[in-house]
Length: 234
Image (cartoon, rainbow, N blue to C red):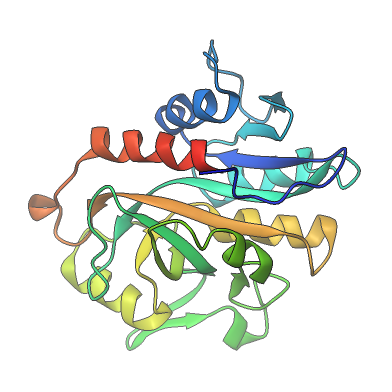
């Protein structure tokens, strides 16, 4: 398979990676060489002719800050948020499978009331330039069509779903197939720095189920191998 992400002359993709284990899977695959040692967080790393990357740290604040600090419209053509995620009930993507986020949805920003979450957007404080979610760029969804993957929203959360009730509620409210902790924050910073049409997409490989922690199923080694394969395809 030839490289999937479109090239722009004299520009590179910025790939935002949250956690060290994700970095260790993704960075060598993008660079097509060994990449050691682990870089400091929030440092721009030149991996290859087509890719820069940053180890952002986990969570929305780290992801948004690292993206805003390092994204350079004169250097970068767009941004990819790449990592692992937990499967939400309903869609139930399988461990090791890929989810291409059609949108990256802020999953738990707002006010928790007796009858559920009141979103920031509904309170007229939208957390992204587009409201509650950041849409994937249509041309990137088209470019990634050759991938065998589920296409669905992915929720960005600060509190992962450790009970069945929380997992069901998040899936129902957001329509997401999976939850992770950075995508919408990366997307929001991308669109604020580069403008509303900035190329952005979130790609996730499923590492675990969500819901009751005692019954969650994890296969992190399988997910990291699949994550490396996904990075090589880009």
